[in-house]
Image (cartoon, rainbow, N blue to C red; front, top):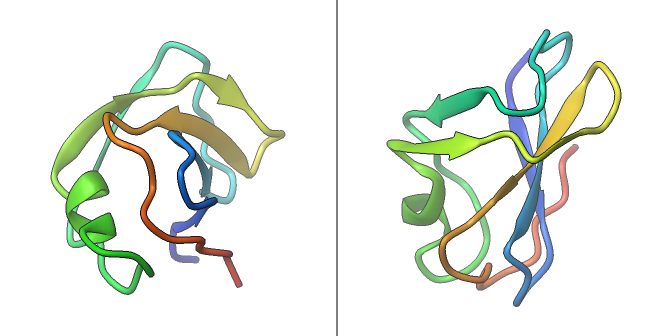
Length: 77
């Protein structure tokens, strides 16, 4: 299953939907070939960057923080 992202415009927080991720708070993640996000420059805010996992949202999602606020609202399918 593909990783998807949920964002709210003007927020720095991103929920990453990554089924059965096995990650822990404090782990680092890097995303490549990110596309299809709504908002000017949203793909480049996440693509080819390393993020620290801020919080877990169960076994299927976690939260990361952007360096700039999101420019669009994205909801995972």
